[in-house]
Image (cartoon, rainbow, N blue to C red; front, side, top):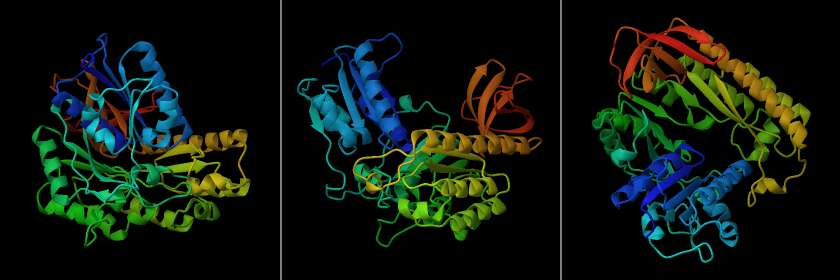
Length: 443
C-alpha cells in the first residue's frame, strides 16, 4: 500500500461537503491520516460536481494538479463527476479509481483494491438503475469536524427532472433519513459543542416524501422540537418556492432556534422560460412566497438562484427576470450562465443565446444582486444580531456570521476570551463598503 496520507479536493454543494467529511472519517477509521503541507501524499481524491461545465472542468483540473504535485499516488475521481464523465476520465488515464455516488461511500474498500492509471478500477453504478435502498446516516470523526457549524445530510436524490438539470440522473431517487436518525445526529453534534446545525439535501424540501405515509420538512421540525432535539441554532440550506407554504412559515416565525435565512431558487422571472425549464410555479407565485417570507421575517436573509441564457430566452424574457428580481425584497443572488448538460432535455431546445449576450445579462443581474446585498447590510446598522464565531483573524479580531447570514468582524476590546463556534450577541456598528462586511461590538 502506498503512503497512507490523503488529500481531498471537494467541489459543489453542501451535500458534497458532508460526504467528503464522511469519506475522510472512514479513512481515519482505517488508519489513514490527512496530509499536512509538505507531507508525502499517497491518496488524492477529487470529489467532483457535474452541475455545470465549469464544475466539470474544475474537477478535471484538480486531477491534473494532483498528478503534477503527487506523482505515483492513487488518484480517485468520485461523486457526481464520476457518474457523469467517469468513463471519459478512465479512457484518458487520469484516475486509478473512479467511484460514483453509490460506491464513494465505500471509498476505503475500493482504494485498497489493485488499480492503475492504465487499468483503472471503474465503479460508477447508475443510481436510478439500482434497487432502492433506504438512506443511511453519515457519521463523522471529530478530527475532520473543523468548521464552526456542522452540516447534516438528511436527504438525497431528486425526482423533479428540471429540463436543464443532470442531478436526478446522477443522484438517483429521492430518499430521506428517518426523523429519529436526524435527531440522533443533531444530538451527537451538540454534545461535542456545535451550536449551529445546517440541514441539507439534494432536494431538501422533498424530505419524507418517500416514506409511507409521506412526511414533510414541517413534520421533521415538529418532531425535533417535540423530542427536544433542536440545536441552539438550526439553518435550512434550500427549499423550492412551492415548499415554503404558509404553515411552515408560521411555524418558524417565533422559533428562536431557527436561523432567519431562506434560500429560494427562482431560475427565471419569465413564465414561458419557467415552463421550458420544467419549474412548477409562475413568477407571480414566486413573488407571493418571497413577500410572505419577508412579512413574517423582516430582517431575514433571502437568497435566490437565477439561470441566465436558457435556450429561447429573448431580450423581453430576460427583462421580465430583471424586473421581477428588482421588485423583490431579496438579499442576494447566485447567478449562473446556462450550462448545457448532455442527457438533459434542454440540450435539444433551440434558440441558444450568444455567449456575449449571456455575459452581459449575467453581469447585469450580478450587479443588482450586489446592490441588494449592500442595501440589506446597511439596513442592519444598530441592530443586535446573534452571530457564530468562525475564526480569529488576529488576536483581537474575529470573523463571524450572523444568524441572518451576514459576514461580520467582531473586535475584542476588553480581554474577553472567545471560542470558535460560540454564539454571541453583537451590536452592528459599521458597514465597511470596501470589504463588504459589517463590524460589530459585543453586546
